Length: 411
Ligand SMILES: Cc1ncc(COP(=O)(O)O)c(C=O)c1O
Image (cartoon, rainbow, N blue to C red):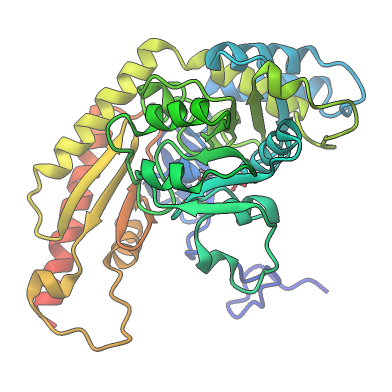
């Protein structure tokens, strides 16, 4: 017998792999989400860089409804005009020749790793960066330069070496006759919104050319307009051989893609890679709508809105804030630890990650944001926000930070 919904001490059958907040959202509209009690929350997280056009966007909703009413799934055994259309639009944006559809970021990176190795023939080793995040399946996890995420899941997939981000010399020193590619995020999203230093990406591109290596850009979080360019690597003069995307591509429906050059794509023969659900027709119909909404005017607006958010945060002059960084609507607010701010003593072993505690308080104050890295508040608002919402965000953030300082000073 199923448990009643109202049972307070309900046993959860969901695996405990997530730390979840208790809030449950029932519906959304624009930049707002609503919980079971009708409470309204300003969504400055976008489902972790996914719902770039907010919730219930009329055109996006219509594209999903239209396709749902026609056909949902036919399999990749058959031609798809919708997939062809989206592939052409994506390839055009990247200046690449082939597109493969899958369902998520980790799958896109798995495919990218396979494609690079196929192209490299005997060369199998991929250079990635310390602090990177490429996904949770074994290949992508092995590419991820964060040992804490590997714990207990070994043996990892061999063939990865990790170099510090923003360190060209380490890349050059790591190249061997087995190296086939360098794989990078144009901004490290999960480990603290780490921004590439000036011309880092283009210099990595030059190194790749020098040593005949592929450059794989993981645009899963940064792509689809998030940073004010369609792909974030386009902030520099870079021409990757492989680009992976997911998250924002279908505004919340599962879809991922690998874009690659002709040289790489021509090595992938029929039946050598595939996916049952990849390129699902409803997701692809929505993505065709999403991509048409990412105009040059919108990209300019994303940059402007991002600058306004950074200015709003900077103008708070709050003692807890150490640094504000980011591009477009991908912003990190790094915090000082509270014992530095109020010169108090923290007993050893006590959790002193201010960001997590503050994000919880912000949620209570009806603002949704996330965390990243060790002590960073992560802001990923939808592209449809207005000045009014930026002001509202600023008011809630400022009050929450001030209340927090008051609380720690008086404890
Ligand atoms: C840069 C990057 N790559 C890959 C992934 C994995 O994507 P997914 O969770 O869709 O598998 C993420 C997710 O956060 C990401 O930020």
